[in-house]
Length: 248
Image (tube, rainbow, N blue to C red; front, side, top):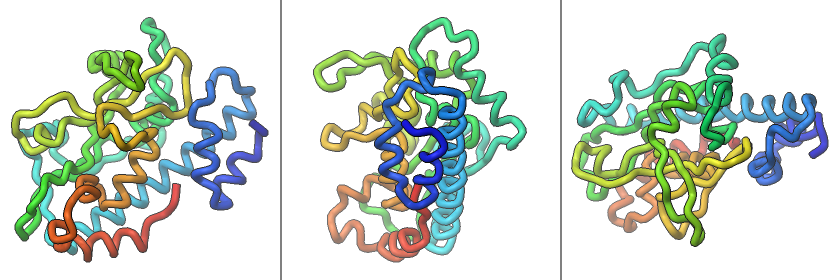
């Protein structure tokens, strides 16, 4: 990886190319200048994601949506909170300092948790919803110990992988009985990003790709599988969001 060029490439519009290049690289093998460049990319991505969340929330309010904390799963009882900027570096360090387990949290996921306190798109529309929407819902971890508390073994590409559940099952999100939710794979190296597993066998995502997928569907990713008739009430929302999103 050429230092000082990745960030320039990223802000020039080659976002997906940059993430393909760096996602499964071992961050600890980078020189300091390369690490600095990667951190610039991550922080720029987080700011764009923050912008996109605000676009979606604004569009939802204009399209008859009301936040609801089903089952009180969100301990903050608010749909969207950021951590203070001054806390970012200290919070990020907590995912890697004194890690005795040697199962490392991907850097971008740890960075997301250090930037966003909670992102919760659960709620109700003022019209009949014919499908289970599986809204994006992530209450961030504070450190690696919390990650380790939700580590499970799951099969991935015919191998057993360690993963951390970062969002509940779609039914649990609606305060109904469900199963193990969506997870991110942990690794024996500090990868920049990693695979999302226990989601859908036909979709092989990294975490940043999962976020892109959610934004494409206004943070209700199950609309991807909805029929044309089921999707019809959401078309104004989807059109408004898609034309205003920033690439990341």
